[in-house]
Image (cartoon, rainbow, N blue to C red; front, side):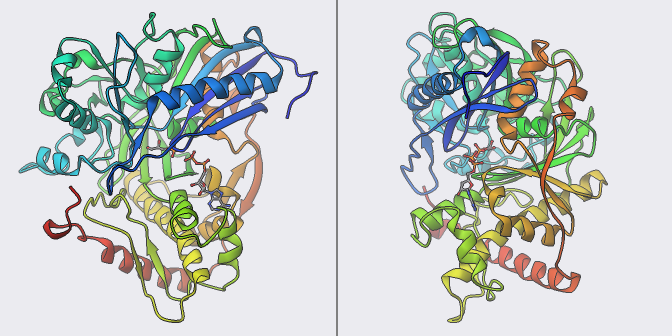
Length: 511
Ligand SMILES: Nc1ncnc2c1ncn2[C@@H]1O[C@H](COP(=O)(O)OP(=O)(O)O)[C@@H](O)[C@H]1O
Ligand SMILES: O=P(O)(O)OC[C@H](O)CO
């Protein structure tokens, strides 16, 4: 990817994602100079439980940083700043004296806190903390996961109350280790990651004491909340020794930043393991009455924070992985397009992948996956088509909710992420949304967003206008489906969604 004549300076971005960690080196035009990436193990101890080994993750992060720097043929002297982005909500507690995690990280998809969330919402409902946090009570968020660990790891609560334990999402874990770990590592998080804990007050940008009390999480474990673009500290040791660590953003907010959605009403949707559509709502948090989340979009230094509305879909790319790894119906993720293209339509089948319940706009932990409409006519190719359509319909539902909440009609959707290499999916998406879908030249918008924020913090780029100039369209899909077909298919999809709800009850409880 690179060669000897590469000249700096550069920004290095680390993306600690759900399935892999990667490091990308960018130049001043926002072009990719080198990439290195490594997958980590997905641990499924019980149905609905998903864990990561945080020690493996930190090892992989160090390896990919070294790999990308080596491929770029540069040294730490050429790198002006390091930006961090990460899978959000995934929760870790570790010992501040030894640096050892007290348990595997509980991944955002993990549903073990369903019962706890139900208990926290008893008599008050799912929206108990929505006014303060913008979030409904759901197993997705970090606060309940921290509480579960404190309640279930023997002796942990006492150690936490003594001040021996640190809590963090993966940004905090990576930054703490990168800046020295047990030898002076800084314990921070940024406003975007903190906004996914259910413990931060969206209006003050501080930990909410009342919620901490209700959730029974001691303040002593919490990191300091900082902006998304400022110098938190310097890397200590490793190939980037001495380089300022200058940004942190949850990966979906980083993609919003990388897609340069800096104006109110601009939106992007990222198609990876899950899918997340975010719309910039300016300096005002917009309440959702249609199942979306209110979250922090980003905050640059001491400027006013920018908020976003978010529609989160738990299972999209991971459904393709499931077709490959668990069902063996395809050999590679890309093959789903060939298989789905071998038929004209879904043959009457609709696949609702409610593997972790349904996230936005329903927030139904009792839902589980269904394939509806099966007859003997249906082949694996129809199922492949239904898999892709599931991603597109779920986006349509989010987009409808966003229009209702924000009053902004979607005129075009900026997309990115691994699934956007699937042309059939992108065409289907444009058909179902009845709007153009556009993909930028740099599809690695998550890393790019983290690099942009770090670059702004150290003066590598002057302002967001300079970043906007880097955004270039690579591909566009426009709607081809007639309205009658779209409406009929949408009704069938919504019927299938209703069939997925209420599956989990006393008879089928997973605990
Ligand atoms: N051609 C394709 N068609 C459909 N899905 C794909 C394709 N290529 C990759 N994927 C899916 O995209 C996901 C990987 O995208 P990526 O953006 O790297 O995800 P993440 O950042 O969540 O790890 C995987 O879940 C994979 O199944
Ligand atoms: O790592 P990704 O791309 O699957 O993103 C995960 C999200 O941040 C979960 O909220």
